[in-house]
Image 1 (cartoon, rainbow, N blue to C red):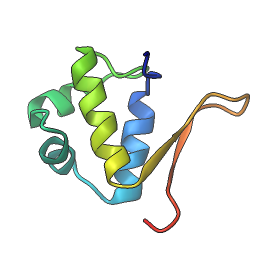
Image 2: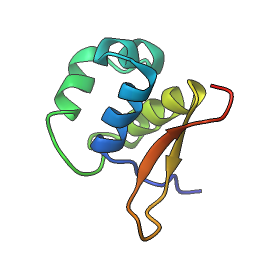
Image 3: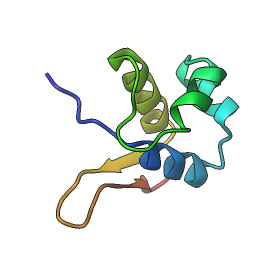
Length: 83
């Protein structure tokens, strides 16, 4: 099973919706703060190891984020209802 890649912009937007700092994301995902900070200096898909991207995505989804796929309008994020 392949997990759809998410972008750095989606990660930053998700953090903004949750009012999370990079440190908050690091704590929730188990990914080190320096790694989160380094990844967010780039643009495009989340780089690094697949496990790192999966941990970041899982933490954000657990916190109530839904990732919206590229569907003609571009990829995005939103909060799940009730979050």
